[in-house]
Amino acid sequence: MAAPELQQGTLDLLVLTTLHAGPMHGWAISRRIQQQSGEVLRVGQGSLYPALYRLEERGLVRAEWGISDEGRRAKFYQLSAAGRRALARESEAWRQYSGAVNLVLEGAGI
Image (cartoon, rainbow, N blue to C red; front, side, top):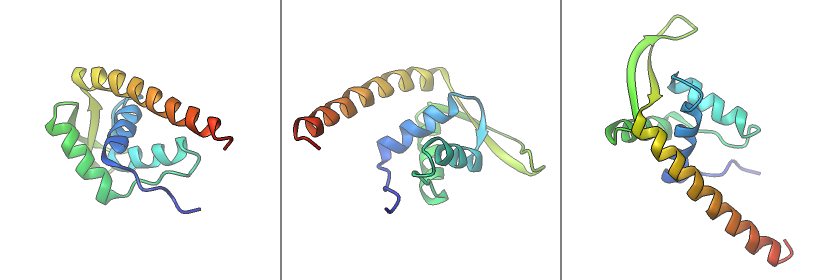
């Protein structure tokens, strides 16, 4: 089965959720999403960095330069206070939405 394509709102939620664990650079965010999803979700640079820039522009994440575990200069992202509030709202909305979809699937016997 091919990896599903992530929609913008879903990717933003996954990034915010991942950053809830603490500051990370882009590659670490991508890898953690992949690991946490059981290797199903893969987020490429072409999707991840526009999402990070969008979240930074909206004030939901902050970024600063640091040194990665590999000794390379990297931009580290972390949740802002507004990002934590947005994560709480969006994760609840996602739970309601996915629960409703599951109810429809179960009702159809799928």
